[in-house]
Image (tube, rainbow, N blue to C red; front, top):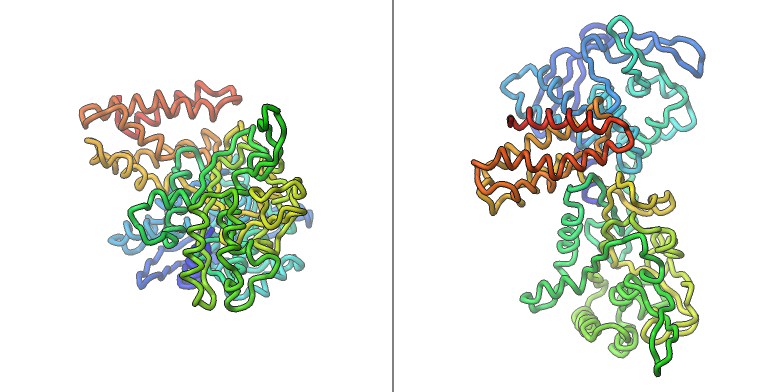
Length: 570
């Protein structure tokens, strides 16, 4: 998540106003939302005092809780869509119901964003579908306004009995009903869910993004992973972000845009046989005078860092802290550090140096390294000692390390000097990765690496319309985009329903639905195209999802019936 997104979240939670009016001793409340000068009033929401068993205290306690006779919401998966529909129906001003639905969807996404950054996927559904959203928003707002109080929650269990925390700490057991009511148990003292929420909200409050005073990288953080279901356009999004990040770098000849993108952006796709030698450096066989010998060769990432980090390499080992720090760099320095790289590299940096000599604190141009399918390789083996360099606090000279072959370098492979070399990831290199978490054939993304990246989910339904419009714009069925978008979203909600017992990571991405363009050339073929789409693309994917459950045929049959019903095809 970029700095811009964090600022946007803070702005949302601080600007939204929620007025809760008691009607009957906390049992019945009327809620008023005010946002962007729009007011939405929800007719009474119902709570009750429920006897709940507290396993830690080994006794029953009474807590104010959601009245499930009136609001039958809790499930084991995210049922945000159902909540939006029911909640919108409680609006007093019926003429605003459509706007209110859009507002609620926005609320849901903001809550997700606040919860998911660093929080396990098992937490946000529990909060989203089990509580009135205003309780969650009030909680986040309170944290932003009074962070010191909520920091104490880590040490003082008594605080979990205070509102609004006490409404958010139940474990729901929706499979057990007694007299038509759901049963729940409290887990006071075991409130990791709330601690995660507080920890994340405090991130937005503190916004501790370290910035170098001499270099401004706009809204991008150093390294981000775009993750989500298959077919959500993660690779396309990564490339678009990379192009946007580097567009200001381009030299004067704008007619060479494509060539310049290739200069500033490196794209690579990981696979199981990819290793340290391919990525950083290693000994590779070469033929010299008819004899096979081994020679040190740089991997793709080290060479990219050599190209992007010419200026920082030239001022090594001095830290960038003085004004006009770049004035110590000469053209001869650039020539020496660009050995083994293209002539284009030295020409670019000489031009950059010439244009920035008079500036006090010039901004280094961004370079973007895209790693597609980042979790398909053995990451510990690929990154090696770069695990240390990946820490945002140790970018640039601060994070210099000795590589495995630091004493075998030549003028063409060294980062700083041939003998006893150092390596670091330049501060102007941004890393974008993509991954599909549910792919069974990939390596595990270990926690040591995971915490070094910002994680940003690509939600299949959020981008459904945008991607389908792009895929269908040149076809004769482009006017069916809305129909296809709405149907795809509805089908995705069925996929993660209780019946299938799948999470949102199993949503089907828009590029799958966009393949309908391959099966129909006009509206007359649309229904048949939908059938082919299901048989050739969606069914095989669902069958893979269901593999090992012994319910493959049953799930496919049910999903096919749902698909036909949603799209109204025979």
